Image 1 (tube, helix red, strand yellow):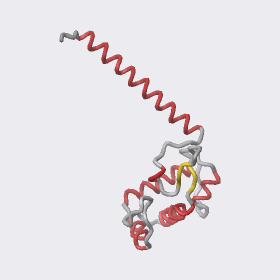
Image 2 (image 1 turned 120 degrees about the vertical axis):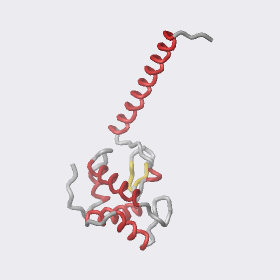
Image 3 (image 1 turned 180 degrees about the horizontal axis):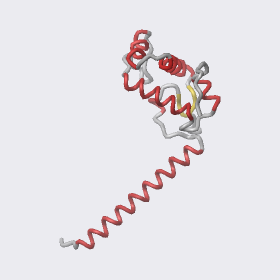
Image 4 (image 1 turned 30 degrees about the vertical axis):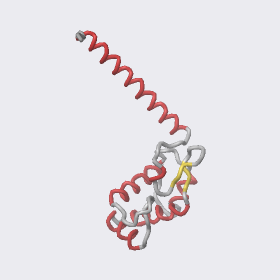
Length: 140
Protein backbone atom coordinates (compact mmCIF):
# COMPACT_ATOMS: atom_id res chain seq x y z
CA UNK A 1 0.00 0.00 0.00
CA UNK A 2 1.47 3.29 -1.09
CA UNK A 3 0.22 6.34 0.82
CA UNK A 4 1.72 9.69 -0.05
CA UNK A 5 3.07 12.10 2.53
CA UNK A 6 0.34 14.54 1.54
CA UNK A 7 -2.36 12.00 2.40
CA UNK A 8 -0.70 11.23 5.76
CA UNK A 9 -0.52 14.97 6.53
CA UNK A 10 -4.23 15.32 5.76
CA UNK A 11 -5.15 12.38 7.97
CA UNK A 12 -3.03 13.73 10.84
CA UNK A 13 -4.65 17.18 10.50
CA UNK A 14 -8.12 15.62 10.48
CA UNK A 15 -7.28 13.57 13.59
CA UNK A 16 -5.96 16.66 15.41
CA UNK A 17 -9.09 18.64 14.52
CA UNK A 18 -11.32 15.84 15.79
CA UNK A 19 -9.33 15.57 19.02
CA UNK A 20 -9.54 19.34 19.58
CA UNK A 21 -13.32 19.32 18.92
CA UNK A 22 -13.83 16.45 21.39
CA UNK A 23 -11.72 18.23 24.01
CA UNK A 24 -13.71 21.46 23.64
CA UNK A 25 -17.00 19.56 24.02
CA UNK A 26 -15.77 17.86 27.21
CA UNK A 27 -14.60 21.19 28.67
CA UNK A 28 -17.95 22.77 27.78
CA UNK A 29 -19.81 19.97 29.60
CA UNK A 30 -17.64 20.31 32.70
CA UNK A 31 -18.10 24.10 32.80
CA UNK A 32 -21.86 23.73 32.32
CA UNK A 33 -22.13 21.23 35.20
CA UNK A 34 -20.06 23.48 37.46
CA UNK A 35 -22.25 26.50 36.67
CA UNK A 36 -25.36 24.49 37.51
CA UNK A 37 -23.85 23.35 40.83
CA UNK A 38 -23.24 19.80 39.70
CA UNK A 39 -19.82 18.38 40.28
CA UNK A 40 -17.46 16.07 38.50
CA UNK A 41 -16.27 14.17 41.53
CA UNK A 42 -15.85 10.58 42.55
CA UNK A 43 -18.35 10.97 45.38
CA UNK A 44 -18.01 7.34 46.47
CA UNK A 45 -14.41 8.10 47.47
CA UNK A 46 -15.00 11.61 48.83
CA UNK A 47 -15.42 11.66 52.60
CA UNK A 48 -18.27 13.82 53.87
CA UNK A 49 -20.28 14.09 50.66
CA UNK A 50 -22.47 12.08 48.36
CA UNK A 51 -24.13 13.04 45.12
CA UNK A 52 -27.88 13.60 45.29
CA UNK A 53 -30.35 12.47 42.62
CA UNK A 54 -30.07 15.91 41.01
CA UNK A 55 -26.27 15.55 40.74
CA UNK A 56 -25.56 18.17 43.41
CA UNK A 57 -23.29 17.30 46.35
CA UNK A 58 -25.01 16.60 49.64
CA UNK A 59 -23.40 16.33 53.05
CA UNK A 60 -23.33 12.91 54.75
CA UNK A 61 -23.70 13.88 58.45
CA UNK A 62 -21.77 10.91 59.93
CA UNK A 63 -18.86 11.42 57.54
CA UNK A 64 -19.01 15.20 58.02
CA UNK A 65 -18.10 14.64 61.69
CA UNK A 66 -14.89 12.92 60.58
CA UNK A 67 -14.17 15.73 58.12
CA UNK A 68 -14.72 18.29 60.88
CA UNK A 69 -12.31 16.43 63.15
CA UNK A 70 -9.65 16.19 60.41
CA UNK A 71 -10.04 19.88 59.64
CA UNK A 72 -10.03 20.84 63.32
CA UNK A 73 -6.82 18.87 63.91
CA UNK A 74 -5.33 20.42 60.78
CA UNK A 75 -6.10 24.05 61.71
CA UNK A 76 -4.70 23.39 65.20
CA UNK A 77 -1.37 22.71 63.54
CA UNK A 78 -1.35 18.92 63.41
CA UNK A 79 0.34 17.36 60.42
CA UNK A 80 -1.08 14.52 58.40
CA UNK A 81 0.90 11.88 60.34
CA UNK A 82 -0.57 13.01 63.66
CA UNK A 83 -4.04 13.16 62.12
CA UNK A 84 -3.53 9.64 60.73
CA UNK A 85 -2.47 8.37 64.16
CA UNK A 86 -5.50 10.04 65.82
CA UNK A 87 -7.96 8.53 63.34
CA UNK A 88 -6.49 5.04 63.60
CA UNK A 89 -6.18 5.10 67.41
CA UNK A 90 -9.82 6.16 67.67
CA UNK A 91 -11.04 3.43 65.30
CA UNK A 92 -12.27 5.87 62.66
CA UNK A 93 -12.42 4.13 59.29
CA UNK A 94 -11.78 5.61 55.87
CA UNK A 95 -14.60 6.28 53.43
CA UNK A 96 -13.90 2.85 51.91
CA UNK A 97 -14.07 1.16 55.33
CA UNK A 98 -10.34 0.61 55.87
CA UNK A 99 -8.88 0.86 59.38
CA UNK A 100 -5.56 2.23 58.11
CA UNK A 101 -5.45 5.78 56.74
CA UNK A 102 -3.05 6.97 54.07
CA UNK A 103 -1.28 10.27 54.82
CA UNK A 104 -1.59 11.41 51.19
CA UNK A 105 -5.36 10.81 51.38
CA UNK A 106 -5.63 12.94 54.53
CA UNK A 107 -3.60 15.72 52.93
CA UNK A 108 -5.64 15.53 49.72
CA UNK A 109 -8.96 15.46 51.63
CA UNK A 110 -7.93 18.50 53.66
CA UNK A 111 -6.86 20.35 50.51
CA UNK A 112 -10.09 19.38 48.72
CA UNK A 113 -12.15 20.58 51.67
CA UNK A 114 -10.37 23.93 51.68
CA UNK A 115 -10.90 24.26 47.91
CA UNK A 116 -14.58 23.31 48.27
CA UNK A 117 -15.04 25.84 51.06
CA UNK A 118 -13.47 28.51 48.87
CA UNK A 119 -16.24 27.78 46.37
CA UNK A 120 -14.30 25.97 43.66
CA UNK A 121 -17.23 23.68 42.90
CA UNK A 122 -19.97 26.17 43.86
CA UNK A 123 -21.01 24.80 47.24
CA UNK A 124 -23.75 26.77 48.93
CA UNK A 125 -22.75 28.94 51.88
CA UNK A 126 -24.88 27.00 54.35
CA UNK A 127 -23.08 23.79 53.35
CA UNK A 128 -19.74 25.44 54.11
CA UNK A 129 -20.93 26.23 57.62
CA UNK A 130 -22.41 22.75 58.05
CA UNK A 131 -19.05 21.14 57.34
CA UNK A 132 -16.94 23.38 59.54
CA UNK A 133 -19.15 25.60 61.74
CA UNK A 134 -16.55 26.38 64.40
CA UNK A 135 -13.81 27.53 62.04
CA UNK A 136 -12.83 31.19 62.28
CA UNK A 137 -11.30 31.04 58.83
CA UNK A 138 -12.73 33.27 56.13
CA UNK A 139 -13.35 31.73 52.72
CA UNK A 140 -14.03 33.74 49.58
